[in-house]
Length: 212
Image 1 (cartoon, helix red, strand yellow):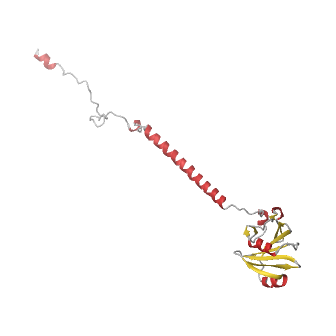
Image 2 (cartoon, helix red, strand yellow):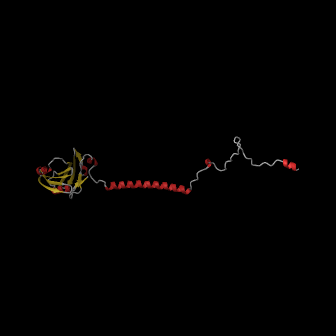
Image 3 (tube, rainbow, N blue to C red):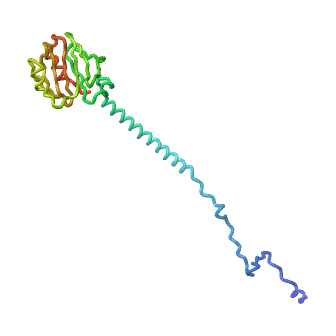
């Protein structure tokens, strides 16, 4: 009995270890767990997604607000600096010197807004009065021209006057009233075919001119 027990083989282990057939050594069993390719990035939390959306929305709203403010500022600047000149744009663009229109008129006088014309470098328009029309002509100031000599020889009984715009004179030319004023690079004449228009009215018109 003891001999049979000694000859009886020992029980084999249920876990058989694998051996490398070449190196004749046990193979290393990889640790269990997920492979790098099977690892997924952590999902973005809903709160973080909401913050990102809100940030983008605020950025767009800021851009819209900035553009709106710029447009409003440009519109305000144009409104403040808008022109109130009655001189048509086509007439203004026809010459290179400054043009002027009456900022104030004697009682009973009106500007004929349809009378503005430009011909050969001279701009003309009419002012209607109770005793006749006053014709205003504007041209470029002539270099080398003696305006003092013009006043003395072409205007009888002339009298000088000064304004914030420049110096001028009124008088008579062939028994008709006439006035003249030099403003920067522009020479402005006021004349009428009616002898009933007073020199004081002409001086008032020339003293209240406004730049277009």
